[in-house]
Image (cartoon, rainbow, N blue to C red; front, side, top):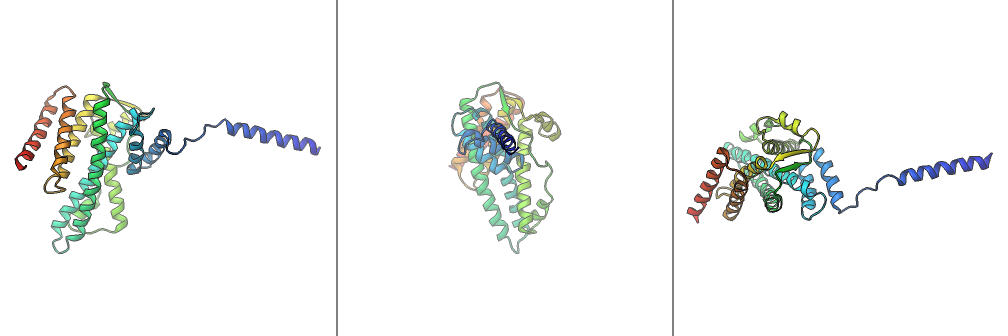
Amino acid sequence: MRDRLFLFTALILVVASASCSNQPAPPKPGTPAFYWAAARTTYHNGDFVKANESLVQIASSDNEFTARARPWSIMTAAGIARGYAELAATYDAGAKANRANPTPFIKQASALRSAASAAAMEFAEASHQFLQQNKDPNVPFAFEFPTGSAAEPAGLKRISSGILIQDSERDMLLKDMLQRGVLLTVCEALGSPEDPAKGAEQLKTGEAQVPRATFLYAVAQALHTQSDLFSASKLDKPDRVRMLCEQAREALQAIPETKESKALDTKVQGTLKKLSKKS
C-alpha cells in the first residue's frame, strides 16, 4: 500500500513538473521582449514615464518590436512633454498671481520645464528615426487607449490663481497632466482630437493602423508646439527651436499637402523667420 502511495505521489510530481516545463519562460531581463512586456504593463497602469523608458530601449536597436515600439514611443514621449509643459505654464501663471510669494511657483515651473525638455528630445529623436526608416502607408498603433481624462484637472485653477497645493495633491496632479497629455496626443494622431470616445473605439483591440499622413501631421504639430519650450522666454535654446521646427517641416513635406498642412507649415516657417531675425 505504501509502495502504491509512493508511486502515485511520484507520478503527480512528474506530471506537475512536465506541466510547468511546458509554460513559456519569461523574457530575459535586458532583451527587447522584456522591455516590451514592461512597457505594456506600465502603460496599462498609467505610468507613461516608465513605459516610455522601456520603449526607448526597444527602439534603440532593430528587433522584432521596433516597428511597433517607435510610433508608440513617439506618442508617449510627445504626450509626456505636453503634460509637463502645460503644467509648467500653469505654475508660471501662479507665480504672477501670487506676487507675495512667487518663488515656489517659479521653482516648480523650472523643474517641470526641464523634464519637458528631456521628453521633447526623446520625442524628436524617435520622430527623426521614424521619418528616416518608415515609409509604409499605415502606422501601427500596437497599444491600448491611454488611461486618463481629456478634462483639465481641478487643481490647475488653484495653482494658476496663486494657491500652493499639498505635495500629495501636487503629485497626483502631475500624474493626471501626463496622462491627459498622452491621451490628447494619441487622439490627435488618430484624427479625432475632439473626440476621445472615438479614439478609444479605434484602439479598443490594442491594434490599429493609422494613415501615415494623419500620423505625421500630428507629429509635425506637436514638434512645432514643443519648440516653444526652447524659446527665449523659457529655456532659451534657439538651436533646439530650429531643430524641432525643421523636423516639423520634414514631416509635413513627407505627406500630401492639404489646407491644414499648408497652414501649419506657414506657422512653422514663421517661427523660423523670427528665430533668424534674432540671431
